[in-house]
Length: 406
Image 1 (cartoon, rainbow, N blue to C red):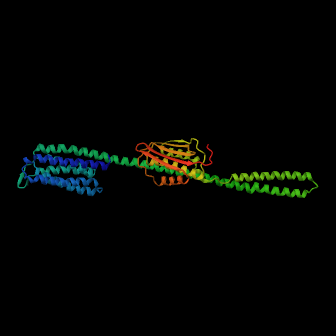
Image 2: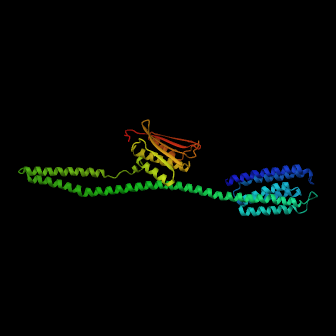
Image 3: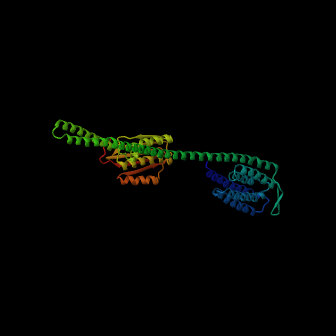
């Protein structure tokens, strides 16, 4: 039980107990040597005490709670003091007051104060007092013994319950923090995967640039010089040596073909676009990394999806899957996620379904709003569906103009 809920429960019990104390006094007032107006005064004191009881759960500062509890103690003493040997209302009011003192005063401090509260109530009841000129009888020994026998177990049980509740709260907080840390770790892992892919792509691009420069500066340059030298040799041979000119021409043509092949190779070695790291080909790597970081069971079905929808659409699909599986863990607390790609109405459908807590009122955050806008700019659409305890479903559709399916 949460601390806030426990305090409201104690407040409800306290209100019922104070009402029961008034009920006890009302039916016993005729046998007490007190003026009739005292019943009304007793009721007023209990009403003020009830208001203070209702205020306690709203107080977050410990010192405010202790001030209110001090007034509650004084009210109980003033209300119970003239009752003399009729100790049942006193017993009822002091019992719930001990529980409140333990809850709001702290485990050790509250328990000690509750014991002193019992001793104080018993001490005052044992002092001969006068009220309205009437000497009040002292409670008999058996009533005082019953007072302790009834309240001491209540103090013990209240102390145990408070201890267990205080112990449980840190465990819940620890679990919550561990869960959030897992999410942050998963998100950091995905970012690291993106960075690693970009770094690998960047290293590959740099290596390709270096190789292209090497080939251009050596082989391509050598072949170009060779072609020029062969053409010069053909001119020097002249028309008198036709066989030599023909042979030199063949050598020149082979050098030209070799230079064309080198240029095609250089064209192929141009740096690849880094945006490809977030295309459809990277979704599998994303899902695998996320599952490894979080322990969530993720099923990926690529179906008959194409290898690419184009640079921009690939990027949006990647971010959609990334946002969907992250939200399933962060907000839905899912343990299973299904990511599927399929053909639909001449386009590509993307579905992300989880078994999380779900909700009927889906409020889109900044991430989903941004993805929706980008999908709509591409002529697609995004649908979000959720039900309590039924999980979430993200469903997107992208157009596939002039795209061959795998």
